[in-house]
Amino acid sequence: MLSRRCIWVNGPVIVGAGPSGLAVGAGLKNQGVPFIILERADCIASLWQKRTYDRLKLHLPKQYCQLPYFPFPDDFPEYPTKHQFIKYLESYAKHFDINPNFNETVQSAKYDETFGLWRVKTISTGGPIPVEVEYIFRWLAVATGENAEKVVPEFEGLEDFGGHVTHACDYKSGKSYFGERVLVVGCGNSGMEVSLDLCNHNANPSMVVRSSVHVLPREVFGTSTFEFAVSLMKCLPLWLVDKILIILAYLILGNIEKYGLKRPCLGPLELKNTAGKTPVLDIGALQKIKSGKIKIVPGIKKFSRGKVELVNGQTLDIDSVILATGYRSNVPSWLKENELFSNEGVPKNPFPNGWKSKGGLYAVGFTRRGLSGASLDAISVALDIAKTWKDETKQKKKSVAARHRRCISHF
Image (cartoon, rainbow, N blue to C red):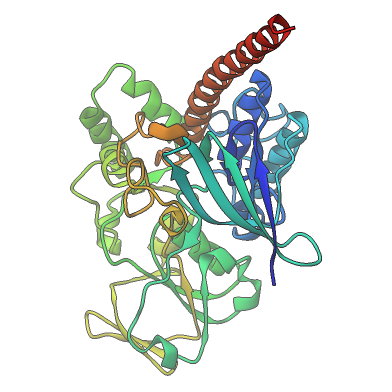
């Protein structure tokens, strides 16, 4: 039997203690607004701490990945490692004295229109027995992100395969795959990096490329491709910047289509903006593909014992499968509203207008623009909440003072 508690919060509740939730918390701290952060895991940034591979580095230079009001240390490299980024986030939380409620999983969040309040029910497993807690408050900031749950597609015969099957979120290193024939399903940044890591640990990866993909060099002319694109967009239209990036990619990387990597019809930036599909920034996988150490194969038809049959009729003998098939939002499973978020759990209005809805509901970190987009959201959300909170606090003080004067006048 669960014990139950009900808590009134004199400020906003933030769901999620990843970079987005921490950034909102920092903004509220700066404004003197009290808040609570609810986090289902036992640590901040659990995606980074528990569901990323060992060799991971930030794909963009650090100045595009730092959170508001607190830059990276000067001695950090341009592309910090996973461990350096986690250290930075822990320093961030300590600097702003942010202390989330860990091991607290949100079950439901509903807006009570009669009272103009949010009711969030959670299960807290941090103590000796689970506790059901209901929080009542005015403002809700959803900061659980676009990558809250892994996507695991269904494949015919996978249950009969018999070998090791794992999602990329549980992959740490290629050490345990030494000498194995590994099928990597997915050709985004994770699929490419996992395949490269497997190669570096003397495994034999085959990477499934089912659709088209943009592969860009990580750097052009001695600067990051992202930084180069940002500077071009200040004076050129997006379609022209896309053309320039594709031409440079061809000149630097060569014709990648002959290796089975077909480019999409839309340019890399337009595709990112419209479909949220991030271009692959090459850090060495392409050279392994060209040398044949990473084999490119088409889509999967079905699995059988120790084998996979591809859509072109080819059959491969494989030992293990790694699903680099991405992530999705989990917001629809617990947030009971349909104004701000779509059925896919992302804001209906595109960036930069998807951060606010009526009833004190906010979204942070769903911009499809990584950490820089999350930071912009966080600044907007914290300032907006702080303004309303301060206005309402003033009104309450005036109201209390007026009641006090009325009481005195009766004597």
